[in-house]
Image 1 (cartoon, one colour):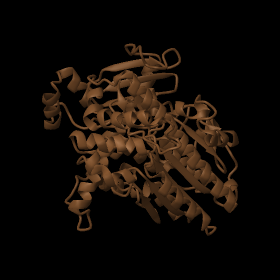
Image 2 (cartoon, helix red, strand yellow; image 1 turned 135 degrees about the vertical axis):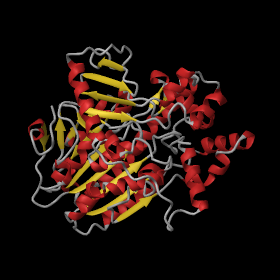
Image 3 (tube, one colour; image 1 turned 60 degrees about the horizontal axis):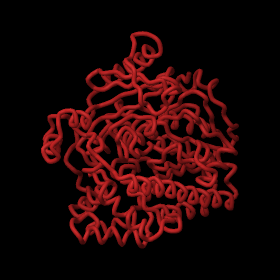
Image 4 (spheres, helix red, strand yellow; image 1 turned 90 degrees about the vertical axis):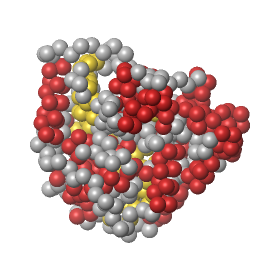
Length: 497
């Protein structure tokens, strides 16, 4: 099993040689990308040929796990090497992105761009996801950070409205199929950065949301006919809003099979669009003459639900389809592992590939025996928001419990123990039951005992922490009321509000 990096884990991982000169690093997070949507993990060869070629040059890690099932906690782990519970970032403290910033500032010296910057790297960030942008603090330590939202955000006053006008706006959005979710603009910015590379080792971080809801890639990747393109856009309006996603989490959602098929199809086409985007970026690195000197890592912060366990989008679960993620890497310092590995290991791997001998990730709360993922609900069952939602949709106590239950899990890749915040345990044999349809009571001994011990130790580590600072009043440089309203609309368009 994996142990603390810098110790026995060196024996567990195959590592490509690191050159004498520090390599560049490109970390691409394909937000909400399921591992089974990528060619190295079972998708057709035509799905992601660029990622497949990257795997042939390097490694596709079979047992990689996110630490959470949505963007904020997973990215926080990828940037600090710590679990979401340790960071206090299972949810943003005050419910909005900016309230996460004080928590990240508290761990600033562990943030990956800060560590690489101290070692002489230039760090540049590019994100299309508000939850992985400067708002929650993910720009800290970067020399430059570019956030680019979808062009449809400019039209979302109409898209987020009600009645016939909103339906018409969504229908036109689908019929035209001209707009992506920020990838094209970020690609131009990143390729420009590569073209003017100065010789200084550089860390490029990218988050793309093309396969995040609403799953509406531009043509020609959107290859449906006009009728189905319009149908897909209306599906997004009807089913990929916050209320609908929550109702699925409560066990009260339903998507017609025709709509679900369109969602799955365009989700896959959006994955292919990002693969073509990656091919262009790899081409830019090659043209600049630095592809062989660049460690390229492609991963996802979490997967996506298309009806598994009655769920839609992400969150509300730690199912394998949400936390068992792809990690493909090639280049100097690329690693492989046959054991289960957490995305929280990425900072240590990158620091070591960069030749940094002393880094904060040598001190870690990550267990040796298994990987951990955590889900913190948006609120508790007695919270006025939960009660208001329950009244609005006539939800019973069990439905409210599903929406407001916290979860932790530990897995070694074969067995998986899931524990909710009431202490209820479920054990899964992932080889015999990969879809987690048959939970078994967790016995006191055997695999359940070792996984339980891992979760208990993580809880002890969290309990030792000083309380995180509470959100304070917004600083003078905070966003204006108009800017805050625009951010709120973006969150609604992504199904977060």
